[in-house]
Length: 439
Image (cartoon, rainbow, N blue to C red; front, side, top):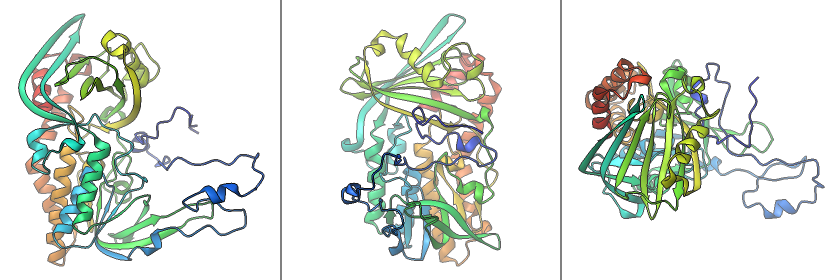
């Protein structure tokens, strides 16, 4: 059996999507009571959530029983895709429930946070409150056989976001138009009847008293539960990812460094990041997101560090301008760089965002893709509900629109990634395609 070193585990959830048995799950960090407890009860008075109680006493009731038992649409996951879906559905006049398993929307961040101006502005007006830096330049450094080539471009326009604020703003926009938003509300099962998804089981507070669930029905469930999401698997739409279609990533927010504040930098080098790349994304005031992603089935075969974090540490140590900085945040996670599932919908059910693997296979970028998918899914769901038919065939226009507007490009990039072996991606043709993908 796999054992977890909880001191090292970053709770990113990337391992879940590659487990063929569904044996791994991601839960909130847990409080542990040791045998030193004298049962004095002081902690009961200090806990704002009513999460503690003496043995034999009933746990304090949770907050979720006040949920209605039926909505038009339930959206699971309050990332960019889920929040845009909830806002779109609510604007269409539907009753909407947006569920987020964590207690804080936007945290933890598992993203390099870069987006292009035009793509972002098509959904929301850029706001300095949640933009860390505006970038107008990019460079790609490609190394092979001891030779490095650098491609540079000027004149673009993009942003490095503050995802903790950005995600929260999107959820607030959904709430402002009528969506009911609930945090600390984990979905641990689908309600399925005669092959049709008709709702979800929501777990409230598990205080050691056994399962504590609420069943909530909906005409359509939109799963935007991320790379670690299980709803797609429970609905029979997704299967475990092969390791070769998974990028394992680690990133620091470094402070106290000197870099070009308007330039994003990419580094493609098989020995540096096998099958992937490293990046430096400026965040203003001497800060930058510095990270790398490696192909999950390759990095263990490359001489060097024993962990992906070790690859990142080596990347930083070899560059004095980065090594002078201090890591103030560490994030880790996995990114699917696979083709989307064959089916994105079933009766009463839709997949969007990372849960649907709607990520660019070359760059791993997925923020705008998720927002676009959430909008398309909710719009299709609203039309289906208005017509009294939420079958898979009636929800299928969402998948067709996704493929037509964005999916075709993702598939092309996947085929391109497959065409060039990981050790051959310093090839000029690959770099040109990568440059287009990163904008």
